[in-house]
Length: 246
Image (cartoon, rainbow, N blue to C red; front, side):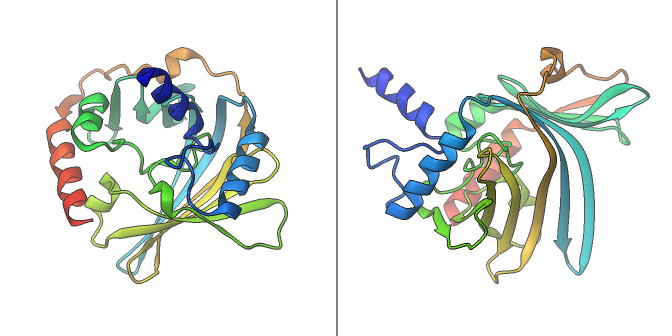
């Protein structure tokens, strides 16, 4: 019975709600909006989009564009087409997170299972997932923002510790999430520091639901000549230190 309950919570935890208080955000209007979002998304389990990212750090703006593919429950591909072939910058498969710096020919691997067991955090949660818009946030802090725009829902929430925050000179503490009222998928994420400054803005465009994605896209193949590093231990220590100071 215990394991049946855990499975049910996992199924609902994306955005749908049950009577269990652990699933509710504690705010009736927010809970109602989350149920509506889940109903709009329905059985969509795969999507493709173009991900635009802007980092605002120390009076500089750094922009990045990637083609993004997501598949439930936890598969992700970020990359670009190079000479007719997909070149990944990041792949999350069923057990590992892989990052690839093509310029430096450096591959870094992270054992997702070990990191989650030791920190209770997803190592790749700093990358938003349109299919799981509330991962990486503190569930009880999610609150619906009033909006006259009926085409979208806007939510605010506190961020859980993540690796991006560990790499930036400012602490990332809060996020605003804009979700389409038409399909229930995330469109924009804005991340703020303790002073309320926008530090990271991510925007999904050209979103295609239930896109046909070959399974091999989520299988990372180490490029020839690449140097492979294991970042698992460092990620565990960073996330633990962030959690202690959170």
